[in-house]
Image (cartoon, protein in one colour):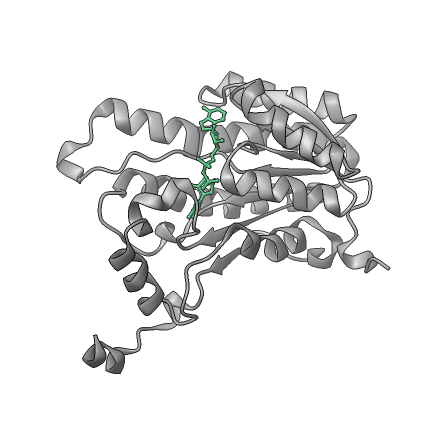
Length: 263
Ligand SMILES: NC(=O)c1ccc[n+]([C@@H]2O[C@H](COP(=O)([O-])OP(=O)(O)OC[C@H]3O[C@@H](n4cnc5c(N)ncnc54)[C@H](O)[C@@H]3O)[C@@H](O)[C@H]2O)c1
């Protein structure tokens, strides 16, 4: 029997960037728990297989296609998703891009491209979701931020700044929309093993280093996100808003300095 606190049966959930590594796992996780899922991405080729897989497993899903890199495009995707789902209970802002470069090599075009998808799209998608959810007096938004919002790494300066922006935006939206019954929270994962992060961990010596510095002894996998995202999207977190859950295998609790002697 499903615990009613975590029950997502019939919830209309739009996931942006759901053709991606993390979004696709979240889409299947929500569908497995009875949600009606709007699977969004840039092209039919990216969303089609995910929708098909959900339907084959007995779930319900609809395709939502559109570019979110403009304010109008992002709002339109949310309205299109809500129309296809017959309303909107949960928005999971999962789109994101990165261009890894030292700060000296970042061009204005790089800067704008990253900001437009990672920050502007989240802002205007959330604004559009609020317009739909407010008349319902209830709704919930979950943002996929990143540990880089608070923990520095080389070559991701603009990406990290956008993720710090997403974490901050999460608090601002939560403050302004609490009285409307709309909760907004975020997760900040450390490196999750996907194609997006393969340049970081793909080689064996890098993988070994990550396993060593992460207190739990391994990097994350997409499935590690499911519990926190389901919690934030469900009634189990009914009095939680403006918060961020860090998912990092313990990285930010501190290093085991003694072990460096063995390396
Ligand atoms: N993988 C990680 O380790 C990790 C860690 C922390 C946070 N994140 C965040 O999680 C999110 C998803 O990461 P991922 O690893 O699944 O990446 P991914 O590249 O696999 O997925 C991102 C998806 O967003 C879509 N997208 C990009 N630009 C778009 C646009 N303009 N319009 C519509 N769709 C667009 C892409 O087509 C892609 O399917 C990102 O926001 C990322 O910053 C990832």
